[in-house]
Length: 524
Image (cartoon, rainbow, N blue to C red; front, side):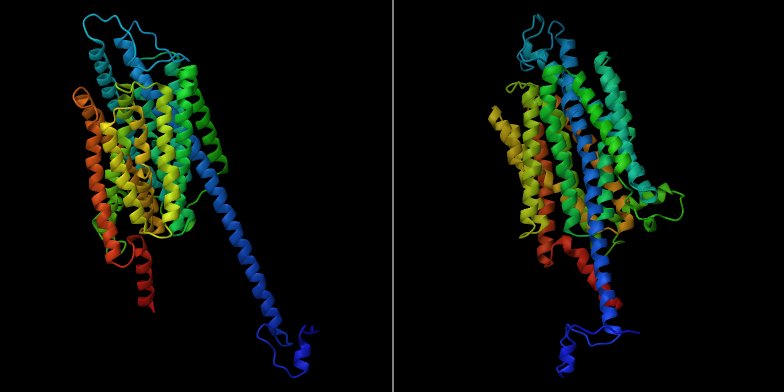
């Protein structure tokens, strides 16, 4: 074999010892070094490839979520809430022509020739009727996903995440198309309950978000990056909500209710095509059970195992329980306020129109999610995530107190500013629970969280509508004080979780790493 001379062979010939970074002239060393260099290059290329793959997956996932939330916001917060109010206003004020054009006035500044009742009495009757109907819409839309989330998400541990990311989008697309037909032909308002039920049985937006979180857990490792990507998912949803809320007001004013519903349908169609064509499956084959037989009872037991035992590590049970209770306290208020808030703003003394309603929702999304994202990213460097969630829960509670006593427009617009941290609590607690959970149980965990989201929406919407109907004549802001009290319970639990982390000389979020180190020491 012909040996190539080393570039520093003069050192050897002169009797100088070879340096550490220069090998002697032999067959072995240069060949080994070339092999190691090749391995390093291959590893770097593989790392860059995985990184690009992660970015592409996240881009497609977040883009699909963005389009879904745009459509959902236009339909649910824009079209449905105002169309229900319009339908009952038309019923009780038959001589009034509802104007959505440039001269649109606020809903309570109308003149009527009613003789047997005063304007205020009839207006309160419209408020009560619309509020009661919104209870039925919540039941139709959110009861089916309680079971759907459990069933679909546990199945996703076997069949993958992608089918259950797509299914809710398809259901929303079908609901939106039916809304266009129902509004165009002015079908009876109760037909819309059936349209909402169709979306509910396919999982709805909560099932999609839950599946998206499971997808993120599949493609990331335990750590702050997973939590940050979950927050990014919430932020992309927020941008979708921002665009939907701001545009819906102007669209309704310019075109009525049909065109906004059609635009939402096109957005959902694009989301379906994007996710179906470009989103790859995330669940590794080795995590899928070999048996395709699904035991629903065992799956259901698996959902509750997190909260009833220390199966996944010593001390994990109380952390799971504490986290889920915090989520419940926060989510009930967040989901429950949406139904009554629109009626609250349409009523005196605010008497808002569709444009003001859209701007208010836009300010809330911009404040909660953009400021929340920046705070999480900045504060992660110096404080624990439990403390960040604590700040978010405190602002969430304060916003309810302010809203209950607001009398002027500027006070009402301060509500989302004060509640800047409301949206931070949910993704932080979900990320915390995900870090404590094995990779093959992520779908089961998020199935339970999806059920919790749906249940909180039903309870919050039903209770808020019932309380608002009963108290609108005496104290219209009482429902928000009730939510402030519930939020206070979550704040107390977060304080307990934060203190437990300080006493333990580590954050609760770092607990999993500590346990892994202990296991390694035992094996040694």
